[in-house]
Length: 64
Image (cartoon, rainbow, N blue to C red; front, side, top):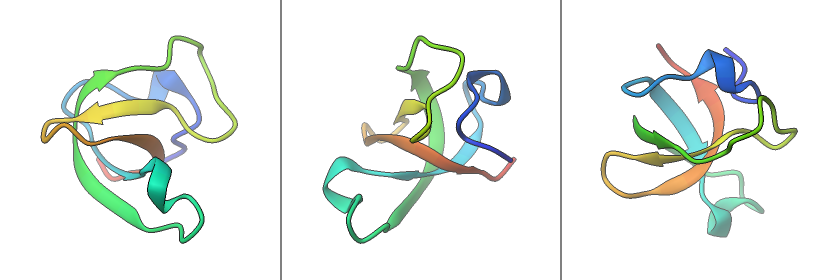
């Protein structure tokens, strides 16, 4: 599912995010959404979230 739309996300969603330092390599980190940080309804690079383990990144894939 598309990680560019805030409506597709909810707290507890399993997602893959790209962290700021991994943007060039495109390395994805998997986790569960704790907070949705982007306020707008969509973002071209992905909605910014905080995962349960404290990692902040932009959503590239929504797993469930």
